[in-house]
Image (cartoon, rainbow, N blue to C red; front, side):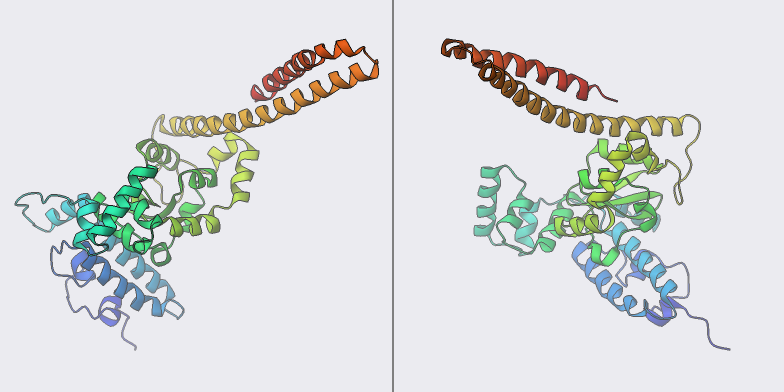
Length: 349
């Protein structure tokens, strides 16, 4: 009878008999390793190794182990979660180390030299963008390197979406409109929180909106703009967003139920509150779309009204002097038509 597969022993060559393994054992790190660069390096190597088994008979075990490796890496590169996790393993904190800024880190990690940093800071001040964006736009280093440093400066994990992937079950619950509007995609459910990847930390109101929609807390992880854009074009297409908008706010809200697979059901008045919050958010968006449409209708109505006034004056062969009245008359008629068109469209339900 063949020996049962032990992915930790057979694939990762981990001999510890006591299970479950902690994150440090799983990633083959020394206990309480604090360097996020080393943590990501170990994860990347193990991820690439386990992927070799994805296409074979052990595809399911491979995917489960890949998810486990990713969760370990994401926890240990998240400053807040790592501190809590280390405490469960008996680590005694002797004092909180100061978190370094992105300016300090790009020099310490040798991402750029001082001249390059000064150039990026000048560019950031001139155009009003963050230093991380300025470093990318000035092409001073690869975006993935800059974003790893940026994530470290914010105390947040960095993910390469090509490695971690996107969770298809949560994709089905996040509205395409929201994903495209805020440039975010769901990575996985980890420790009761849905990890959402985006180039910048999600704003609290966006996290709150997602929490109400999905029924689980949301936490930001960072990725490059290129990575999230590729994932959005694959999983949250323009066509899907257009279909949601065309279906109306209730349809969009229904696309992301408060309680779904992997999402705990809310109690009491929570479902109603979640639905109201979701509908209000999408209603605001729909009103913006209606206002844009109303402005276009108003412009067409104005042009049509003005044109008809001038054609009328020409048709009745009015005296030359009356043409001095043509412009104000055209403006009056066109303005009235525009106002009526704007009111009708903007108030339409």
